[in-house]
Length: 256
Image 1 (cartoon, helix red, strand yellow):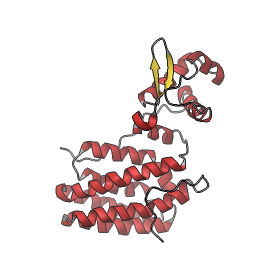
Image 2 (cartoon, one colour):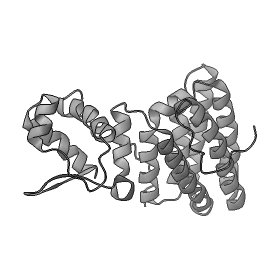
Image 3 (cartoon, helix red, strand yellow):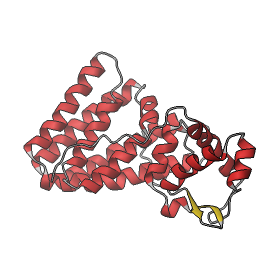
Image 4 (cartoon, one colour):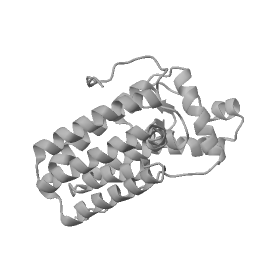
C-alpha cells in the first residue's frame, strides 16, 4: 500500500455566487435555530431572501448536500441533516475554506478526534514504519528547523510531520481522516504558530516522537503524542476561541 501523503484540497469555486450564498446560508440556518430533520425554506423562498437566482440556490444546495449538511427530497423539500451524526468531515473543511470561524465546541471535538486518531496511529507506526517513512519525518523536521531559524511559520511542515506519522501506518483511511483535520484547521494553526514558543516546543516534541517510532517503542510514542496534543490544546483554545463561552475541554489540562 502506498504511504504517500495525500494533500487533498477541498473543492473550490472561487468567489462564485454559489460560494457567496453558502457563506450567508450556513449562518442563517444556525441563527434561525433549525433542528435536524426540519424542512428549510424552498428554493424559491431562499432565492428571494438572498437576492439570487434559483440556479444559484440549487448549486449551493448541491454542495451542501454533497457535504451531508442538507438533504433534498423529491416532491417534499430541503431538510437539514443531523450533521453531528451523518455529516462528512469535509463539511468542516468547507466551513474553514469559506473563512467561517469555529465555535469552542467544534474546537474541542476536532482536537479530541485528532488525539484519538494520532495516538493510535503512533502505535501502528511503530510496528509498520519503513525507512522511507522515517526519511519523510526527518525532512519535515529539517524544514521546520530551517523556517524557524528564519523566523517564518512552521505551521505547514509541522502538519506534514503529523501526517507523515499517520502515513507510516500504511492505512489510507486514517491518512484521509487526518488530512481532513489539517485542512479544516490550517488557518487556525497559522495563528497558533505565530507564537515562537509553540514552534520551539513542537520541534523538540517531534524529534522525540520520531525517535520513539524509529525504535518501535509504541508505549512511549503513544504517551508522547498524547502529551504533545494535550499541550497543543492549551494554545488552540487561547488562540482560536478565547472569548467564547467556556465549555470545558474533554481532557483535563495539565498545569503549565
